[in-house]
Length: 291
Image (cartoon, rainbow, N blue to C red; front, side, top):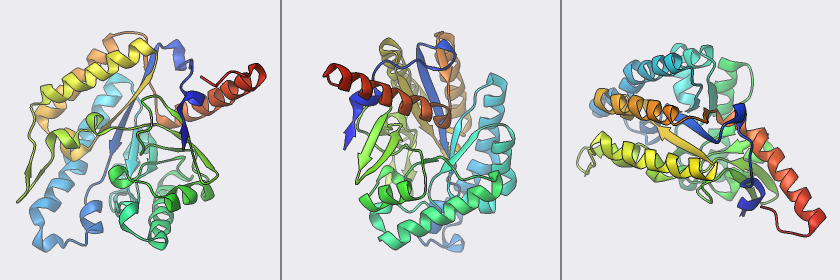
């Protein structure tokens, strides 16, 4: 279970900022469709939409981040890395962080322990081939984690996770003897629930202003607390013209608030853990609970 107090105490964010924001992007491409064993010849439109994310959405995101001087964390399935090495390589070339997002984007709670290990190992190998090093962070496909997955993350040397919802500050998650820094997520801070759509099931086609209003409200609350926010976007979703225009305006509005830093999850991971250690030591010396 988590101990939010250990990591949610007073944090000194990079560059003296009052609050911190992480822009994260799940570059799924066709991985999830492959993981569902769908055939492209029978689902060509669905596959083409996923390719749009790499062909058009991702370049828009990278160009904008370059213009703004912001580094992001890109959660990339192994399948995407292997099939789009040039495009994913550009993420690395521009100095962004690559983190693990499965191989075929298979949610861990829907596969057995052996398949969970395979997803992790194949994903690590694909990212290592591009970067020359193992990823530090993991985000579960569909944001569901099992005890087996958590144990494997510890075994494989991951430093942090970004799949859970136990706090709205970064914290230390402990399960089965494994301790990871957790950068919490929430569906309200993900673009998918606002814009999701599927043939035969319908979905939502929200006005981008709705997402922007919720995300900006979250930032203002975090800023008042001196906290951190993780936003999650998908190139095939937010990369669409009108949505991306709203995303650009949102990020610029956040930046104009002043005293905010944009940080990758890797950049903050050691900061959060070292703060938790200090808080724990202080509580032990005083007998007070960590905070």
